[in-house]
Image (tube, rainbow, N blue to C red; front, side, top):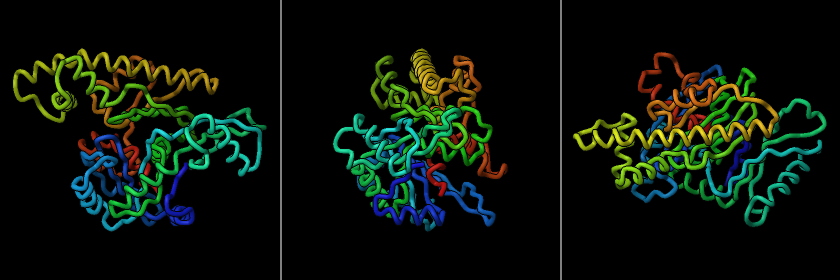
Length: 360
C-alpha cells in the first residue's frame, strides 16, 4: 500500500510503526465521509464512529470548512491524525513486469516506465509500488506501481492541516478499498474479487486477490453526477430537480405531489439506460483484466459506495453479468452484531474507503 506524508518521511514511518489511531476521511465529490476506529486491548479494531457531510471539501468555502472542523472534532474525540484519499488527474496506477532486480533499481524502473504516461518532469512525482505474486513468474517481478504529482499530495495535506489535523497519509482510493476488504477477511479465500466503488463523480473498478490489488480503472460515465446529467437531459429538468428526483428514487425523500410522482415514473426509463451502460462498462473492465492476466473469469463482484442505494442495482448486475454479486459492508467484520441496525447496514457500504483509510 502506498502512503504519502507531505511533511516528512520520518513522521510517516513513525506513525506507521506505532500504529496510532487516526481518522479516515474520504472525499467523494459533493460528500465527505469520516470513520474512526477503536483499538481493543487484543490489538483488533472496531468501528467507533462514522459520519457524512454534504460538503465538497476540495472546493469548500470557509463556512463549509468550519462546519467540517466541528464535525471532525466531534467524531475524532481528540484524535489529531488523519488519512485522506486522493483521486487526482495526475494519479497513475499501472501493472509492471521486470526482471529480478534490487529494490532501488525497481523504483528507478517504475519511474522510467511512468515517464511516458505523465505530464511534466518525473522528479515532481511521488512513486511507490506493491508486489504481485503471480504464479509461473519466478524469474521476474510483477508490481502494481503508483505515481502522483507531489504538488497534488501537498495540496491535499495542506487541506487536512487547514481542518486542524495532522496528515498521516494521502492514499489512492484503490488501496484504501484493498485495506477495507482485507480487514473484513473478504480476500482470505484466494479468489479473484472485483470491487466496484460507485461514487458521486467517479466510479472505480478494481480486482483484488489475497493481499494484492491486481487491476484498477475508472468506469467511464458511470457515477451519480453522470446519472443526474442524464436525468436532466432526458426529462428536460434542471440540476436541482434532477437530484431531487434521484433522491426520491433512492428512498431519501418521498414524492410530495402528483407531478413529482409522474416524474418518478419517467425516471425509470432513464435509469434503465444508465444500468445498461453500467454493466457494459463493467463487462469491458472484466474482459480487460482477464486478458491482462490470462484468466477466464472473476469469481465475485462486490458493490459499494453510494450506488448501492440505487434500487435494483444488485439484482441487475448479478443477472446481467452472471457472476456472484454482493453488497460490500465494510462494518460487518468490525462491529458487534448488536451494533448493526438496519440503518447502519443500509449506509455502511458508503464508508468502504473511509474505513480503509482509518486503519493504521
